[in-house]
Length: 128
Image (cartoon, rainbow, N blue to C red; front, top):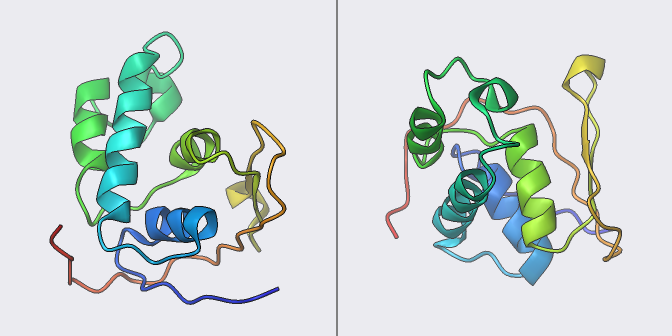
């Protein structure tokens, strides 16, 4: 197993999942994957209700706008969407049992991503 450090910049989940899928660290991957998540959420309004999405947002549209902010961390919803979008099997382990998440829409690739607890993101944002 190889270990790859990804900058904890608020987009690290998106960058990590793209790296896992492509084997490359692409500059605009996080932006592309954030937009893919928003598209998936808007494409299935029966499933992605504001109650499902959480995060104390007033509407699904507000959640989507919030998700497009480069400083917004992705979570369980985004892992589930991107596992399907990128055709990956993603398992997340955490030291905090309530924070554990598992997104396994399809078992397709023998690649695993280990996510540690987020650290404070620095305030740099890459422009794509």
